Image 1 (tube, rainbow, N blue to C red):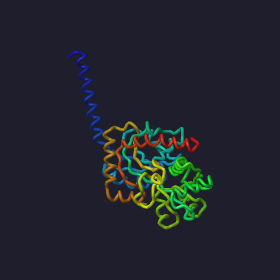
Image 2: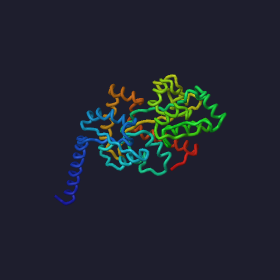
Image 3: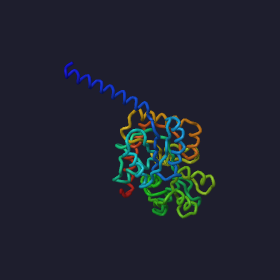
Image 4: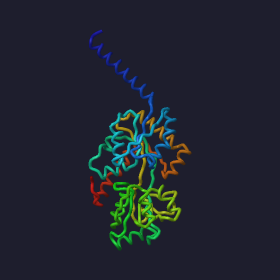
Length: 326
């Protein structure tokens, strides 16, 4: 056997062995627990969603899915930790578009890149915001509200659950599209903003449908409009901002599970299938609806499409609204 033939034979056998080994490793996935990182403190909406899906995904994958909270820096700490993890399917991130489009629109330097560092496992669903008003505000629809804002520029204000949140961006988008100056008042969370709205310290706020609906039902606040393109099924009589004279207006938080870039396709498909099966479970679906999520599974590829569509639009609104970019 000449040396050249021996080398070719060795290369063939080595390549075949590597391919078989690789296939067997992928087929065996997962062989240990999977960590699902939540970049928020325990108890919030995203954390609640993560804990509602973890048991079903664990059963589907045959290994425990462990929720780990890594809060801080507006979700950047948890997101960066996952971005720097090995793309082996054992470390995942669940978060909202605050992480993937809102923060990148507001911050020039982040410890991760939403396009280069992540790939989607699947979109879980959306959760529209509601523009709500104190009952004493002399406006019952968006047209009347904008008329007041134009008559007395700078007099009206809107609360949000913090600078750089989806609620903040929604208010600034309305300012830009309607040509008004409704002043932003940031709060450290939804609860204090709602308290001041009910107490009359602020006239308006954008808040999640979860926080808004009980207060609307109790008559403590009134709904003016929702931020989705279509009406929210649980608030069927509340029009969208888009249908109220501002076509195309959309600022809807969405929740997605992603993995570090470079995840093997077979593992990506296995994780995506487990997430889809979980969301098809009627009991889990009903529980998520109770938390305010409109469950609508989208495959991993939808993540990149959402970022590509939403990020440029948010950057444009941030520029037009003269919001400082950090």
